[in-house]
Length: 180
Image (cartoon, rainbow, N blue to C red; front, top):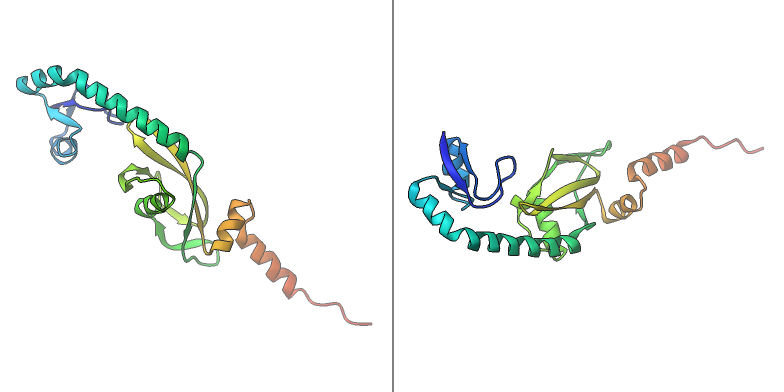
């Protein structure tokens, strides 16, 4: 295990300035290259203490900017057109990259690392997706996964296009009464 000083808040790990004990691979492959932490040596501790106010000020500024963007981004719905089977099961899945590209096309610049998918999106419908703009600021975006633009509009209005299609097919297949 390796001791590191956190330079920003890290989910499920700790706050800025904390010295935490993590596995060497996590520190070497994620925390250190992403500039989220420093190794906990005497020199780095002294450096962190001298830079603490600057780091906190930068963090506060980034957090306020993220809050401003979150206010504009809240409630955004993006449509993603995908091929799917009869039951609404997608051929493939919708990835964080796809959602990031759709949100960017809507006018907000975000990266795929900021998208938090709890589970893969493999069905048609409206899916709530978390976007972390800052370690302390998150917003929810709706991903409208449909087979066509018309299907996306119907889903946004609260109508399930698959059920509607089934009802239309059932109504069309009903035998006509004999003419008297």
